[in-house]
Amino acid sequence: MKKLAIFLSIALIAIAPTVYAADWQPAGDKWIEKWWALDLVIRTGGFGASAAKDYLAEGTVDVSTNESVYTNQSVSTREGAGLTGRAPVRLPANNGGILTWSVVNLNINSTNNMYQSHDIPDNAPDHLKNDITWHGIILILSPDDRTTTIHPAHDDHAEIWLNGRKVYNNPNWTGGATTAPQPTEVDLFEGENFLHLKVGEGGGGDYVNLRFSEGDEDLRIAPTMSDKFLDVLTPVEPKGKVTTTWADIKRK
Image (cartoon, rainbow, N blue to C red; front, side):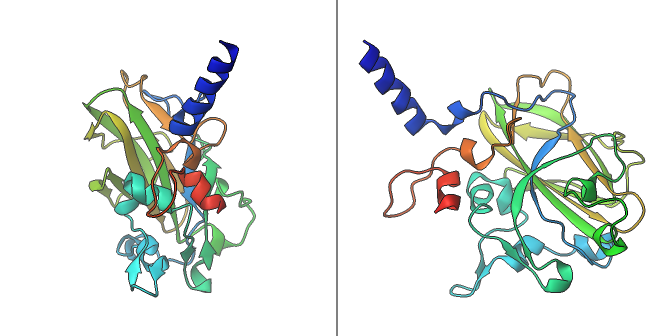
């Protein structure tokens, strides 16, 4: 019986990476504090100029195919989110150069949490704090299909894609780090949902925040409290390879 229990435990780990995620972030009306985020794009020319750009597409062009590995839209899907661990975003040095993804922590009450989430000090040069663009992704596990409401707070221009579709586009700053004057209705599927939040900032305050609604406490959010993201995505089956996780792909 003991050997059977050990075998079953190993089997569960092999087929269901989400068992690692015992410490999901709280949802409901709690602001999301951990994100899978790209290094900051700098010297963007302001939020108006950066809103017109898809830095992810520009920085992941495969020279052999002339196609982008992922885009603003595609990283709000399981495949696109997973590919962020395999391909960095290669931009001109003036915009930050080679940018990679990692788990960051947001100080939800700070009006400068965009640059602070990347450990940039308050006395850093202005080009690291102004005219910047922030990209963040979360995984939302829902126990059912539902319509709910997201509450974004941002300074300045924010765009949100959910499950491959743009659901929010607001060029106006919202007035406070936890002030969300434009709640937006969205649809979640049972199982995995992926949300990509992009915010372009011009000068002054720079903050980004998002929460769901009361009654959404049963949603599970990754990155987890122990900073896992790629590890908890469902496994993939690359052509000619054994089933693996997105985290395995990154390590390889």
